[in-house]
Length: 479
Image (cartoon, rainbow, N blue to C red; front, side, top):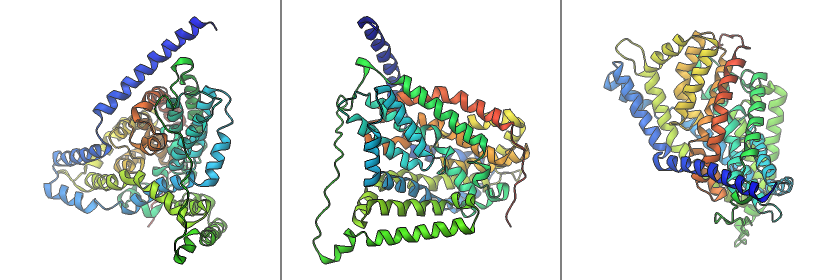
């Protein structure tokens, strides 16, 4: 390739990057904080309830009485983020990341490699994938023998959450539907309990996961800038020094256990014993699907990997700010769900029931799947929370699915496929990753929006085609 061709290629790349950055800048300028969307959602739902004839008393009672309905689930989702962060920042995982960072042999391969690793880890824990991917991107960016675009690396690190997170074990909707104690009573009477065998581990869901991972990797590889278009971490003023803080010296006898590995090891043994007992006495899918058990294992794993209580608590302190959005937004989602399902109008029907009738009128099979996917993706732009939004959508979506004889497990997975799409545009869940990378959302959104343009038609096609392979199974409602 001659010099003129390289220069022409650089011009094209700069033009593409400029377009992407303009879009990201527009998003940053005009999109308010995600909490504003949640507040606006409560207002819109309240207006909708009043519009169908619900009394003001019914609306305000539903709002107040339902505000704390998701207290347990809110804590569980916050713990998903916290446990993922704690495990990802542990010394053994940090050493693994440094070893992985030397594998890629070229700039574009490095970007696609980060995308693959981020998505693979996301199948286990989306909170872990954000931090793991960000630290891997930083480790690769530190390599003196490789010049890689830091923005593309950062966008690739986000692909675990931006592309496939909801098809993995930490899927909020699938976890909630598999945990009887977390399902709101009104929803439980529609769906019953759906374990991972009907959602995450169906061959259709696993095939979707593989297809989306391949698509994402190819796009990440070929959209990575090369030549003069590359902007490194140094170009963007990012300090890549990740040396851990030196632990403080023990100053009093009472601190001895804080620096000892004894208690973490005992806690780890107890957790392992509990896990073995569960696997020996219960079906494996019920154990894997248990959100409380999942969080217990990850929390204790983080404690063991950090070695001492002091180091573990330091990691927890750094992780807590990343949970703030969940803690303040989920009560609003609970209030929305309560108004939707409890404030009846003049005809005795709630907003949720009116919406169920609308979706039922669409029909079954492909049309229903595509419309639900589009609706989920659109709503996700304004309610960027897989678990919270599922609780808003689920009562009428799952009722509609039952009415048109759509498989309920696949309906959950249609939601999960489409739920990831708005993450590629709305930067709410980028925040923990951005803190690790030292970047701004507009540095990444240009690259992630390109992913969105390819993912949207593929997700709609898969939701339609694979939905045809399912049979309707009536829900089993627990007494």
